[in-house]
Each structure stands twice: as C-alpha cells, then as structure tokens.
Length: 73
Ligand SMILES: [Zn+2]
Image (spheres, rainbow, N blue to C red):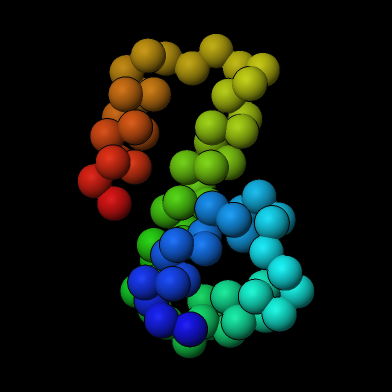
C-alpha cells in the first residue's frame, strides 16, 4: 500500500467501511510507516474529540483550533 492510498483510506477505516483484506493492508502499513502512523494518530485523535463533543459543551475557541489543525494536515 502506498502512503497516498493509506491516507485516502483513513476515514473509511475509522468508519469501519473497509473490507477485511483492506483492513489488513491498512494496519500493516500503519505498523511499517512512521509518517503515516503520526498522521493517523492525529486524525484519530481529532475524530475521537469530535465524537465526544456530542454530549459535551466545548469552548468555541477549542473547536476553531481543532478545525484549523485538521485543515493544515
Ligand atoms: Zn506511509
């Protein structure tokens, strides 16, 4: 798997929309590629943060900062 393909698949992976063999290839690349691991961790962190916002009040400024970070990835 190329880094480009890996990055294209991250959102699908997080939504559990990948086929089993794609998940295997994805996780293999995640283990082997330091750059993609870092990238993945950041996306994953932002994803969890947004997910937990549903039932919590989050300061406007924090939301703005996160959105900015995601845009710059
Ligand atoms: Zn990579």
